[in-house]
Figure 1: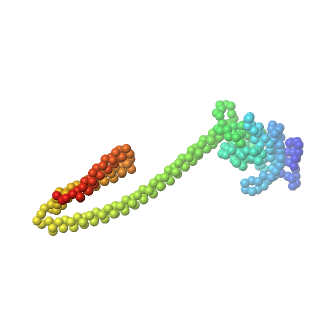
Figure 2: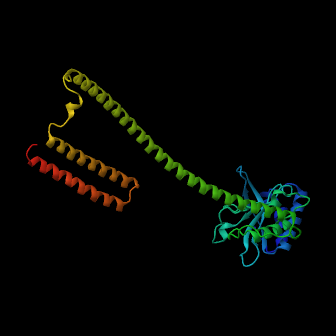
Length: 325
């Protein structure tokens, strides 16, 4: 259904009967719709009328009038193609406004404060729609101001501050809503980063807890082994004490562990010195592993210990070859 004259098209569509009739039943309502649409097309020649089937969220389908075309916004941003449906309960109910995403090459940018990915548009003017105060022409004017500050296809960030006397109440509400929207988006992004950071930290702490638990199990096993070894040493000590009590009659106990001659005493001293140097070198290795001893100090002490250990072992070899004292 088409006509070169918007006024004739609207009149023919509204007052058509039969199968082509629209879903507007009240005659008074039709005259209000006619008046608002004619004013709209006179004020904004870039819009043109048409009819089509509109499907509500509950699945019901109605045949309605709608206006479609490009809304000019601030330069150098491109115009915004829109479709404004006049619902069957208009003017008591507000129009349905959609940005025509299929008419442009670029999709609507993510998280637009007033337009979702399907093109459905909300604004303070629509949310606060009142029959006695609102109409289609003023709606389009509010949309032009809205898209000038928040273009659907180009991110422009939060609107710049303007003196309250320079904007209408609806525009001020839209700007506040826009600023709150961007603040919430920034907070969500920051919270998302913190959640990721804490999740990574939680994962790391969980791994460390598993390591600590494994170490605790090893320490418990080692503790059990040490307890068992301690019991064995106590038993051996008791057996040794009992043996000494039986066999110590007639000579002092201290003499039982004395060297039989000078050579045995020297051998014992060399062995003791060798073992002492070996313990010192082991302690140095532990020190460098734990970072309490520098590599330079470690090498210096190892050379000294190696020299001393060599002397003990050389002396031990020499003693073993010599005669008994």
